Image (cartoon, rainbow over the protein chains, first blue to last red):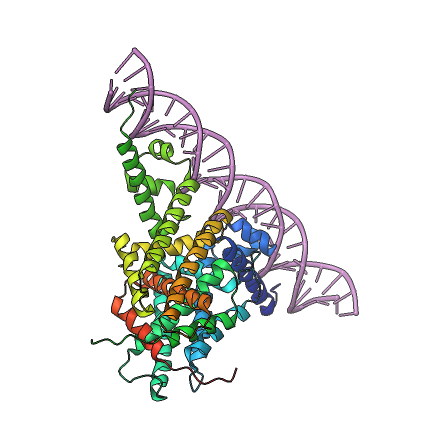
Length: 209
Length: 209
DNA sequence: AAACTTAAAACGAACGTTCCTTCTTGACAA
DNA sequence: TTGTCAAGAAGGAACGTTCGTTTTAAGTTT
């Protein structure tokens, strides 16, 4: 047997995944050719196809890895007790997205948000991946719903407020800023927090509903 | 001369654009083949290539059309006087996105948000389109910044609040919900508005900064 | 009949993948 | 410790397919 160590196999797999992620973040899944990936990871076709059965499996591996990472980031935020207010929680979540893959692309955009947007488009055309995304989203929504319940317990919100709607809104803010970061480059934590604080100071018009 | 009427030419062009938009919303730009488009619009290659020089031009036409539409939606919202509070303004913006292309995809997602997400990924790999997106974004940001100034004038916000940061945050909410709609299907105006009102009721922790 | 549009076949290029060869590795005998 | 060897790992050319596009022929309108 001339088998190499398991660490070597794992490292190779990781090398391929990282190089592929870089390519995909730059050009998207379908505009990236296998030969682009091969060149990026400095490996031959024979090598890569030993670790992944094909391009689809490579894409699926990246997508699920990104989705797992996203879920982990949200869940870690949901663990804090007492839950920070959104103007603290949301910038912190974005910061974690940068720290996770510190590399920036040529144009200054963070890598991870770029991958997120690419994953969004891919899940819309792959029902299998769409199911994974849906499942993860449900969990995130539930987790952040619990944060909102924490707000209620702390007296920050009326008890009859729509917890799930607020959870979805906070997630939307994260997603939206992730999109802006992917499209226009990084943004400072202060800007995000300041925008949220400004939003939270706008008084609601009295309504008779 | 056997030229066909200008209306016919325009109608053909529109027919191609609409069919292509449907394909692109379903499968993305690069996973959609020209033959997919030809089949969708019931035209042959010779016909389509008379109106567009190639796939890239078709993509560019769709992208710029989507971006123009988005800018129009935001700008129309910015015209209202006095400016509605975000919990009214943002759901209304999303509603307009649905009304503009009322067709829904097979899985219930609205067509326009799907196209938006596809456009986001395409602009990250095409510098020319990225410039168009940046320009439109700047205008939207400025327009919504003026809305925030309106808030200040109406006494809804302290004068020293960061207007641009709030504008970016409101845009992020729209973008984030657009992403959720593209990924998970439509959402009711009430949910979006309710989530925003809940967010706006959270009091800010006293800070000594 | 002339001018122009549409249809359909076909082309070169590029893609993902496979296949066969070469290189490298680690166990084991001496 | 060292040399040998089988088998796993990597390399790289070549394959069939599919892509975007072009070309050519037929049809249609004024």
